[in-house]
Image (cartoon, rainbow, N blue to C red; front, side):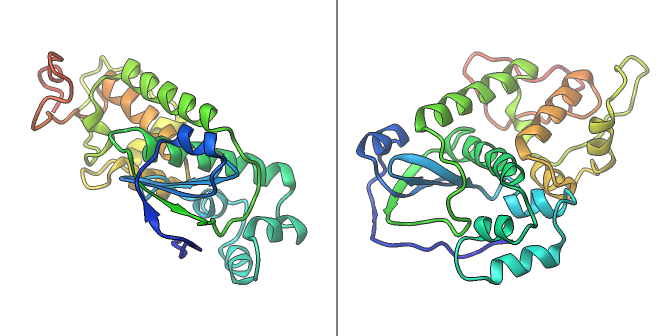
Length: 240
């Protein structure tokens, strides 16, 4: 579900996240692949079209019904606070889901080939305050996730292309139940982002599954149209 942003001020030049934190700035850092929201220099939320939003994680995951979510959105004020005050979620449940969605979207907004392109001062997210996170911690986690994916299977093209099954040759290791759910949706049309949304799982966790599946030979690794990293060889023969 996509909701309008509450904005104030005009979009300016694109400072860094840590620079905005040093200023104790409040607003929305607009990136190529998402938006990071700050309040008094701390990160309060993030969203990306690549990552399922908190509403998807709560409803598709079964914690809230779609009707409960629509009722919360229709109320005046912060959506998160209403969900807790009305007894639909506990503070801990909201905080855990919010942090998962925040770090998931921040990875795509700040890393993964994306970057800042402007800052909208005074913008606030419709979810309302839940738990702020330091900008340094968000950037550190973004870097950690990128390194983890690269260590699993250093071919980032599998993160964005439709997931294509490979014919098993009898040597590929067995898959986990989580991976089996991903493979069930791998039809050569669905991208990792779409699979994550349909499963109601964070997109980064889905990328971990897909990179592991690619490394094990269960899904194909498409060849890049141009080298992702100079000097790095393409995927092994037969991967695509």
